[in-house]
Image 1 (cartoon, rainbow, N blue to C red):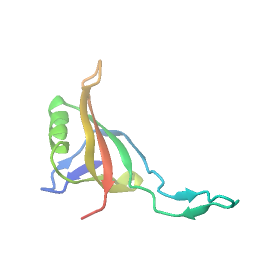
Image 2 (image 1 turned 135 degrees about the horizontal axis):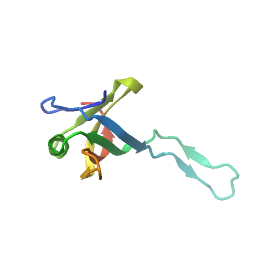
Image 3 (image 1 turned 60 degrees about the vertical axis):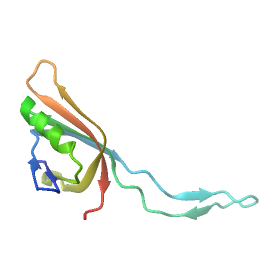
Length: 119
């Protein structure tokens, strides 16, 4: 079961299901094409940290609102999903959305996130 833990006071958010944790890692390599050369000059650099969206499913409006409130705090969070070996720290960088799923009693919380180094 996936969890999200706050750094400030170790509060744990436990969604019913993680619908998605899509992320991208942008390359930071630099490729220069010098005039008169057939071979480029390449500077290799590590990729950026993960940036993307967490989509979390909750079974009640109260649980979803509680998750939105926690994710809205000025804090660092740890995402962990042991079943697939995922664990990484992140901060919320953009919108946090709470939406009721039409026709069922479930709520989805989406948060834009960016991976950060552990402190």
